[in-house]
Length: 101
Image (cartoon, rainbow, N blue to C red):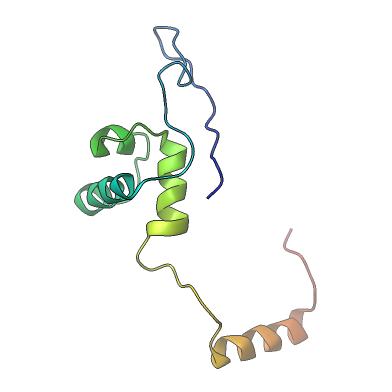
């Protein structure tokens, strides 16, 4: 996984997240477990509270992206089904290469 650079946020005491030692880089299995347990207990949302509730030294953006892109149980991975391929082809034939604006 690529490193996620969180925007340094200046706190009221003048220290930024960079000086607070927010961890960057690859996630450990232990961090994944802590994040999963936190989401199981409190649910998704209120991402600013997640790092402290989970006991993680990560920024809220990093926690949200890790959950949404890797850990969320209903993420579908793998090949498209025949029905999905058929739907994609039919919609492409109907709509073409239009981009949403």
